[in-house]
Length: 416
Image (tube, rainbow, N blue to C red; front, side):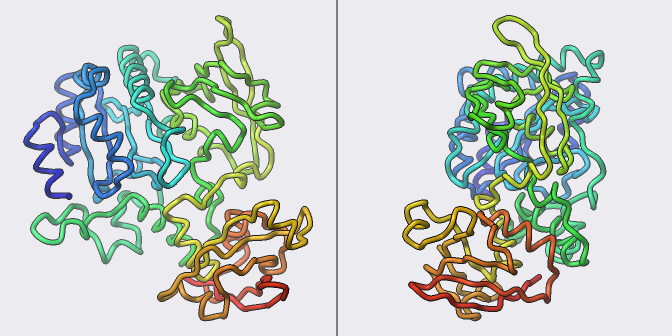
């Protein structure tokens, strides 16, 4: 698949293939902005959008003609100071200037296979139009995009993380097993966490709960627009901040958003202990100022279970169990109180470190009601957060499960 993709795209000749230095040089020479698409070849979900894009959609193609377009299929050697994004994505887009100023990002995901509420061709077209507008106003509008670059990462490129250093180089090996020579996006996130975990350092909450989706704050944005409020959940952070359906976000923490991904970028940069994000909106033809007020611990409402990297947490903290929250009716039948955790062992790993729970005696269908003395960890994500913040590899935690009408206790190892 990797070799065929390279052949197909290079023969077509429209996209610069896996050659960022050439792309930057071309953008500098032509004065065009750049469009960099980071795309995992084996991902059958993102191909649904990417093939439409490559196949010259009649709305998007005229917009693409105004960009220097780059198809980047591996992260080997990728500049992590410049390209910072949600590495649980397998399709991520950067719109930027030849001088490495980032105009915006596109590409959002909140489910393993269902993208319908997160991305669309219409949304991509709006982001491309917005990028062209920012490019035409640059550098006078530099303040609008200054916050779209992050700080220095732990390492400069993925293969320099200790857990990847001995397995990968800074480029693909087309003469050998090209697929196995590729650093996948999710491996960057796993390597970043291992950087802290394996050295006994606390993993920052920004890394545990990365790129919070706006919907975790009750803010449902229209995937067909740049940043238009589709709905607001009652009683949510978004509702208490005064946002309503139809609001168009024109500035988010001083940045002009081109997509939901740009909103996520601002949330990603906001401290875990809360804060106030200034928002400019257009409502019924008028400009208004609002503030999104984030409470202490706001990140922990995010769902980690869909992320590919959640499997590394399951190895580290649950011995390979995949846990899902019980339905209310099942909780009632089991007699679980309102504040009592009830996490179903939906899957039990069978091999290696992922079989630790199986070796300890747990079974698929068990219901976890106590983890490390805590009975209030209502979701798998909260359990991950507790385990990471309280334990290190080599520790042991006590767990209690319901198996039929009986309670059983087991010891689980915390693993690298």
